[in-house]
Image (cartoon, rainbow, N blue to C red; front, side, top):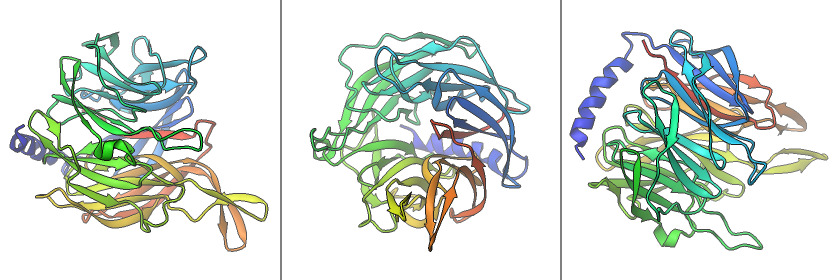
Length: 408
């Protein structure tokens, strides 16, 4: 893998992320089946709602086409079996406003899609399913509409409870974090793994299963890539860890992590905590990771948020070794930050605090709405909270958010 070439391409691309030409950004946020478009003012650190489209069921995840002219959206009623309704819809992005309009026919898929992505040339949509764990690949037509599924070879290993799917920076491998499941009083632990596949022309081939300690106490949720160096960063959900893996020629991954780091300010307070999304800064010098504190407690007969951490952990990255160092734990000013997004220039970060919650302040209890929280990213990578936009969260909550630079 020629990472020197990738570095040069990133440097050339990075010149467009400077301040010479203003970015025209759209932020998309899903609330149940509603997907809203916001104009994102990176200079002013503000959002203004523009329009909303309705998907057939609750939005799960979305991913833009490399041309940034189409957005692919997975939706589901979150039910298994015959009553389930699951699919993916292509939406056309208005280049002036970012507004979304249906583009061609939606496709039906067999189960809830927990994550989707598009390969580097924009020829195929790759869809991951959590239960049953699996992956399908669907052709993208030259006009951006969705086409037929691509037959895959028998015997592909999809692990247990896939939670994300990504194409590696070379475009020649697909990585599938499979979270497994923690043990319960009636069921033993399902081991986790990171599955690596060779990828060519929409076809997957088993290459490697990364499962330290046999996958026990190993629940990988999401991964992201360094933009110019051979490193993959993985959130380990229930264990509240960040792990770093090396990318080897093939491409494939090192079978064990190069580094394992804590994600919480107080790692001994792990009860009711879980990681969420992860994003490497476009310049490769910083990394951002979501921590969700989910435990509730009772106060004067009211259910309130316990002493937990809802934060974005900020790390600096050693550019030689890939080692991350925690430099900040920024409170998200909300509850359950399932997803967050950065603008391509790396100046603005927006967190989707998914659900409302009641919180105790001294002897009072106040309501904390779901919201979109806006942060400025400083030159040292740290986050400065600017403002938040409260949301009337439906049953599905503010489940996904993402930012797209509009085509010129």
